[in-house]
Length: 362
Length: 99
Ligand code: SF4
Ligand code: SF4
Image (tube, rainbow over all chains, first blue to last red; front, side, top):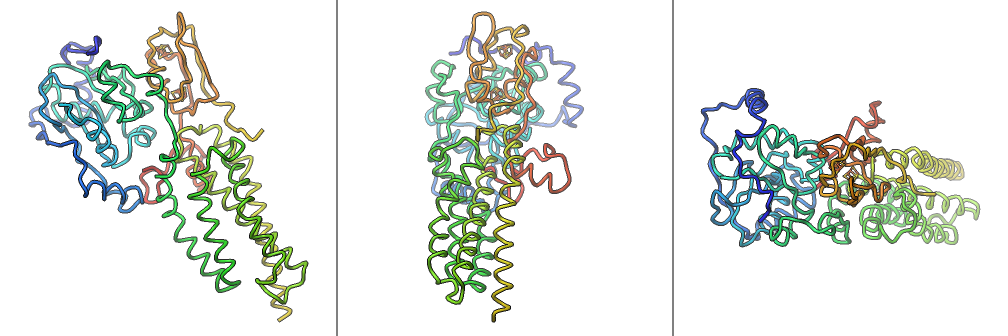
């Protein structure tokens, strides 16, 4: 058991005045009865798993939510631990699944169906919402102690000392990954390894469906237009470009040289598009009426445009990662977006000039 | 070369630190490490400016301009003529990235 476990009354904190102000501020009625305590289990059903797949694919984005409030897992007593989670099914289910066999309460706050990390970044998994949910749920009437266990990744949105000062509840940050909770609960201390964020192959791969879904419409549109204007080979380049940016790039991220995402994207884009450019330069399959110079110029476009697009998709992957600082991303934008625009623009210009000259020939 | 992430806005004032170790608990990148009288900056370049340490330091010994490193949000803010830092993140929007 944690020796620091706080069993003092909420009212013994220096939060009395602040709490009253807060209750007034959020319009809570002191006489209103607390919401019912719901029951949950650690079992992840088939329908939960189906919901996870839909969530991972970004289908019905706003539907993967759990009602905010207090949940009982197992048969908790007033001395049982209280875990705080986001009201996003993937976050809530990962927590309850990791707590199999542990009797406890889960306080679900309203993060608008956003995961813990992103909600903390936006401030919705934040100090105010936690204090509000403590008051709203009447948590202090249900448990004897004044301890909350939060996921470590909620820390960017939460100020532990502010929660304590304003509500009397002590915040304890659990490990980064819910799966480490059983080990963490034995001593209430996390190892350095448990505190570190990882971005494993699996972590990166689960992001790819939603990335693919984002680009699927523009890719299909580009592929159809290219098919009609140039032929199946050009349509294939469009599909490969989208697949490389959204699936290959995340999968290969740590293995591509350089640190910046844009340069990684340029390298990967170059490697993937060079074969297409070579085929175009050496083969008259695009248009047999074209001169060698026109073939080479078309090949240049077949290299420049997809490489620039792949680099741009790669740069945008910064938002999905857990280690890109805002300062660094801004630098990347100023350094490389002009280059990407130049490459894409030059490629398009060459294609337009070639198109006009071909029309004139016809 | 080709590393835009060597510098960031993290500032640490060791003279203010009361050695509560909260920053070590919340930092997901092991930027801080334990010291005798106060914590030490171990790998400042690993900081991703999440703001967890600054928000949880009870004595304001850490400052950081926190924000989300999301190129999509910054570029779309710039395209709308807004400050690049104004759209912190695209999460939760229809085409949001965060799952
Ligand atoms: S801002 Fe985040 S990543 Fe940077 S030192 Fe603080 S906790 Fe660590
Ligand atoms: S949180 Fe602040 S006071 Fe506590 S160890 Fe870190 S720098 Fe020092």
